[in-house]
Image (cartoon, rainbow, N blue to C red; front, side):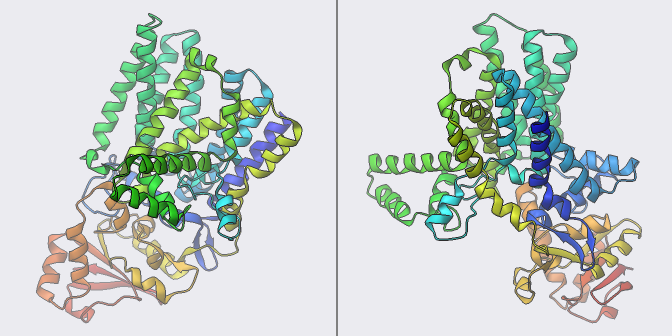
Length: 548
């Protein structure tokens, strides 16, 4: 238990530093590390809207109900914050990351003991759950760069788990669902079946990828139990899980089919092509040459090599799991369910891309990597001590650079104290739609690192800190959500560029805009007195207007 406790404490720190240091009000403003200046701010904004209604209004598309997004984690944040003294920032960046990392360690240790009946294997499984990484450091060495490369093969590794709270909570739910599945298979009863059904069925609300993977695996296992074992105990669990899944899916989705596109091996090919990933120009040239020359055998061989690089590179030292693999695992339902989860997670990874951010589809693969760590742990017990030591030293190399970047004195992005004050003032005003200047990519070049949130990335910071929905904000998220955002971008651009007072006045009225939030890096195209607006706040960084 001492070793498990130490591993868990180290794991919480390893996975949590970026979270723990984000969302604090420092002397320069509110800092954000890693990708949290986009992703974390989105969850803050969404929690604010969920405090008003369920389903929530889209924070960056005022007046439109949010669809095509799994917001159950954000409901937890919103409601706990609403009924306690905890702020959303404290829950998102501090409390939940600690809870998720602790449960990851405890659940992994328990699951590994169930699967392999060995406590040492359980400890190794916890080690991989926290510290496993890719072979990206080899790519860095080959390019004569500092050791890094956590996501050189596209997949983020356990060090980044808490940067994606929906993934983190979904993984925890899956782990404990597999443990509960084991208990149910050994001795079925209504209570265990009911809880298991709710857990698997509701996954789609926490992370859509997880819900699809687990329900698909449960379906196949149910068929196996019925047709091969003549056992119908899993059938009611699957039916109820599928019912819960369907109800939730239909309530949060609209036109979800348009969120993905069929593009086989896109992740593999771009991994090989992109200089910021593996980047092997010779392979890229050969692939196109073979494709153009219709040399299908050579083309297929290049793709197979790419696939091998993808799997081995992402697995890192977890590849040792192959040495401990046994055919007898296929005869045990729990192992079979895990293999099905792993198999189902691979299919969309290799065949599809996600609209807006094509590489987002890699998140299916994260579940494969987690379970691969369990089988790697089972293999290591057969290794000599010097190999065990080597694995401990090699395993986290690629992720250490990620961890180290979170220790830098200053974050890459921040909300200035002046903007923080302005938005806090706006949060005290009556509810209403806010108009802000659309994100201008060219503006970032006028600032030095660290960057203000307003120029760092297109994010939802105005909604997050004002608690109000914005006419158009965080276009990157709107693309992912498959919303009809283009007209709003054009209208907002026109308002802040054209000197057409008649059109501008009508635009404000027709879209029920109540406030205009304008950092002083931007200006209105005409004198503010010309518009039907009244200044209600000003400091050195921001003007806020109320529409009359």
